[in-house]
Length: 303
Image (cartoon, rainbow, N blue to C red; front, side, top):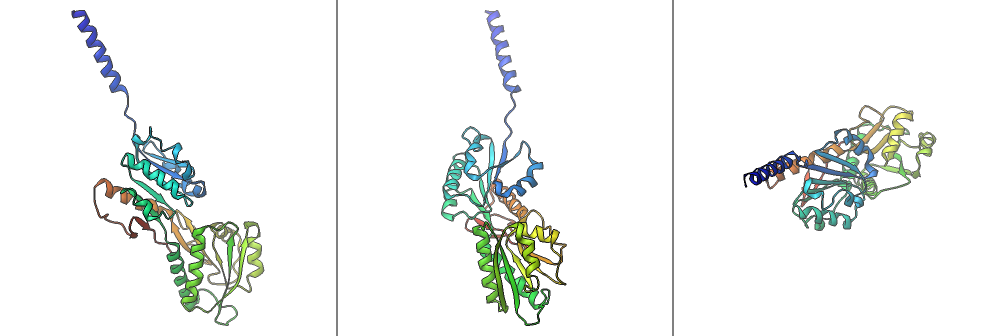
């Protein structure tokens, strides 16, 4: 009997030691970044760790990472995708709701009705119509102050617009708002051309049209990069106007380029602030510096 009791004790001790030796899985924050935002993924990749998982994939492939088995280990889900469908957003929200973890959508506007499906679903985006309005006001000021040179002295701002071959909805909203608001502000303008170009023809176009155009409005970051590296300014003042997205303003020291800059780091800082408020059960949220409408937070541009 004593022998049996001893064996039982040993087995129990072995079981307890085995249980203790098994490490608990480390809980982590999951961020899925679409291939279209690879520069953002590359920026955060060095900080990838057991606590922070960054994955390069389209939002539609969320099922690879957000599984029923893995959900118990996830603290939050962040989806960074400019082209997420309503169906994918709803499916991700439903999964996160099952285990009561916050979910954040970045860079695309998610309908408020979709966000209302779950109290811990939020959208962090940008109002591109508003951004176009703000940049138009900046162009108006630059024109009035002579930062954009009136080369032919006719008091009319003559410019060309260069549009990429693939034009996104957000770029279209920005562009429509920009042109509309430049006119509404009373700037006497003459739009000389609206050129749809690939990168291979971009610099040649600038060189051929530099005498007619007092400035070029660029709607694509790749064009801005080429202009900074290769374009030779015609004269003093701002010659290139554009919109750029990224983690830092790489054109701040380029005098002939003036941009409307969307800082992606602000998206992630805002997400961290919201997450902190949720964990501390602070409602309404504190310390948010950007515009909040319902469950969407809109990041301000830098000009």
